Length: 260
Image 1 (cartoon, rainbow, N blue to C red):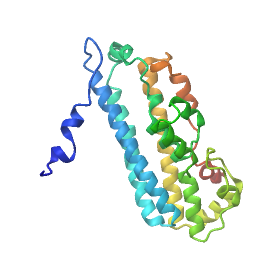
Image 2 (cartoon, rainbow, N blue to C red; image 1 turned 120 degrees about the vertical axis):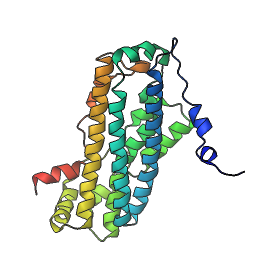
Image 3 (spheres, rainbow, N blue to C red; image 1 turned 180 degrees about the vertical axis):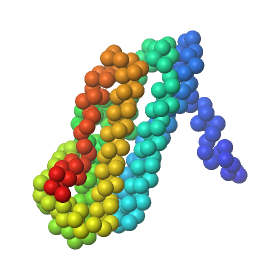
Image 4 (tube, rainbow, N blue to C red; image 1 turned 90 degrees about the horizontal axis):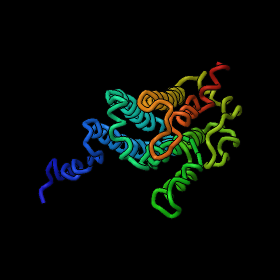
């Protein structure tokens, strides 16, 4: 069969996936569905790029890793910008179909939890939202045990001959990334010498800041839509989302600035 634009991208199948459930139909529900489906596609791409980034870092290929990280940053900016579109939906419009969502909630996005784990946020509570033995639970359990981008970065430094402290290299991969004064001493020397690794570190800071910006914009978007109400599906809503703000992914890269 000849491959066409429609068959290659599965356009008929793709366009069949937007199925509003509100009754009567609310015009803005289509926007709500499309935005969240697009987010899931971007999460998939970020996981794809992030896994590739870890492979490049582990081999010490900082040149290609920098290009991959730059792509992830561009995608992240697009993810943040999508909130501007979603905020054109008024609270009244959302409330007109919110009840029909029943138990559906963004808290159930396993891809976002997988992305968090890749970034070094290892929260075992995320596993409890999925049945034991389910494909999504199995994938998150694998991600929980896998090395984060930060640990892959540390491996890359070793490949370049740098004496990375064992306190960083031997840290349990199932734990959230934490600051390490010994690692900061190494990073200080790398910053002062300049070069490609210094530049890559600053790109990691851009990624960290971008994720924090995405979280903040998401909180404010939810707050302006439902206020302090409980989230869809019984989720904690804004109160929980606020608790995730201003928690750095790569704390060593922030803390070392006080010593520069």
